[in-house]
Structures are given as C-alpha cells and as structure tokens.
Length: 217
Figure (cartoon, helix red, strand yellow):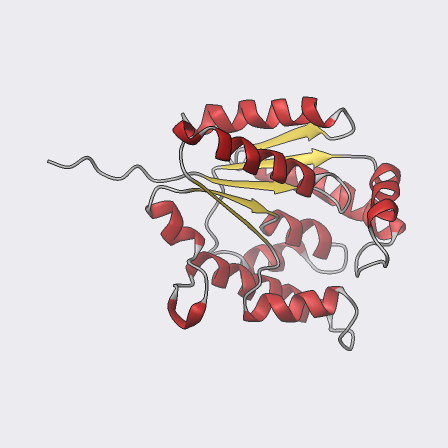
C-alpha cells in the first residue's frame, strides 16, 4: 500500500510595513532551497497577483480613486479566497489549499491578521472576521514586532513613495491592533509566535527557523 501524502504546513509571516517581512521571507526561501530534506516549500504573498489582487495593488499605490474602507476589506477577503482556492485554469497559479494537499509547505507574506490589524482601525473587527470566516487557519503565524519609528525609518530607506496605510500615526494604531488581535487569536487556539524584529537579522531568522523546524518535522 502506498504511503498517504503528508499534508504540508501553512505558515504566515506578519508585521507592520517595514518590520522585515520581506527580508525574513527571503532568508527562509534560501534556507528551504539549501535544505531540501526538510520538505518542499512554496512562497507567496498578499495581495496576490490575481485579478482582485491587482485592483488592491492599484488602490494601495493610490493609483485609483479612493475606495471606501469596507470595499477594500471585501476586496482583501475576495483576494484571499482566490489565493486559497484558485486552480491552474485560466493561467492562474495553483491555490494554497491544493498545494498543501500535495505536500508543499506554503509560506505567505501576510494573511488575514493583516486585514484585522490594518482595517479594524476604521472597521468593526467582528465584521472583518465574519467576511474571512471560510479562510484556512495557518498552522503557524510569525508576527515580527518592531517599533513604528524604526519601521518608518526602514521604509524611508527603501521606498520612493508612501502607500495607503503607511502614515506613522496610522501605523501606531495598526501596531497596537496587531498586539491585541494576536492575543485574542492565541486565546482561541491559534499558533502565533511574536518575535522581536529589532535585533540582528540573523538572530531573528534563527528564531523563525527553530519555529518552522518544530512545526514541519
């Protein structure tokens, strides 16, 4: 009898803009590539490059007429479901659920915790959670915790323009939301690891690697 395919793990990396998500995701991608024995990995991000994600990206870059925040929330939720469930038909990439079923460990740069933290500044959290009800829960969420002043300084070094939601006063509220909502989800049983993102990149990555290895092995 053939061994049943081991399902992959769904891992999300979160934090305010400038917290180091992209840096740590790239380090993790290189680590998986160099250590094939730990399993297959697929890296993705939100907003996606799918049809709804494209609209969101234009809105974030302020290239669209400003949209109502509830419209933005619904777009993020729709993009997320497409991210989870799309097939390879119509030249779309395969969705997260299908990849997990095939044994891939899927690592996403942002997921629903971002929506909850960013958009509950203006929208009721219970409604945001409701429209994301059918989303797959991550097996592990890693939240990089960085002071807003530090994240702002990092963004100014790497960006030529400010995107929607990136005002420092706005990010202070978002950072507080991340802390509060992460605690709520932890109390409900979600596996969320909060990591100090203000340290040396290699030390941060060691903590991430340890958590990932514990999950997938």
